[in-house]
Image (cartoon, rainbow, N blue to C red; front, side):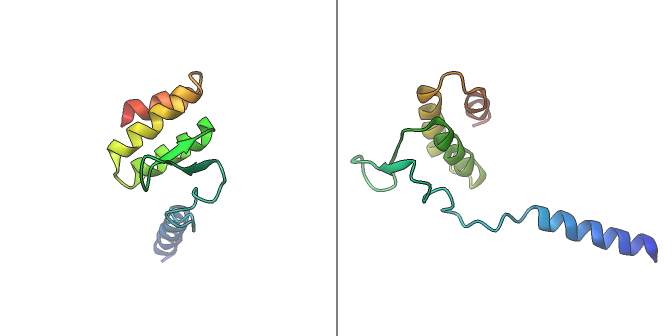
Length: 91
């Protein structure tokens, strides 16, 4: 009986760990990006970390082509940001 309770608690903890509570546009209100004249949905980043976060979000939702563009922008903004290069390689 104890083992069943432990497994149930472990399952619940793992399920809760995967829930961030943030909506799909959680990064949109950070003020680091502005709408681009290139059309709706295009974003111009001025901060490499913001571009990296958006690229990661796009990868998570399966929008690989857009993620590649955003991650390339992050690398352009900060060539020393190794995480952006790594995520670009994954994409």
